[in-house]
Image (cartoon, rainbow, N blue to C red; front, side, top):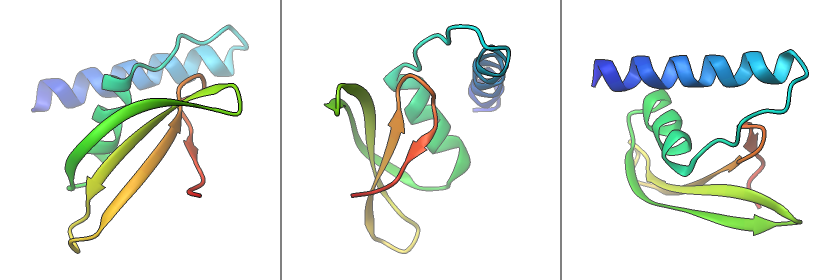
Length: 86
């Protein structure tokens, strides 16, 4: 688990550096998006998929929160940034 977390942090760090340098960012994969959501919260991942919304790819990760609620997290595949819920 520590190795996965370290790899995720390195990947996201390189992604952020690419964006801040004004370079064309590498697309965030669904697996990377799931790992980032899983690494930030102690929730159970229920499912994940990629959808096209407004001509952009969006990763949708469904989680079960610690409070027992089902929640969907949406992440822009190009920027890696979380998107507001509908």
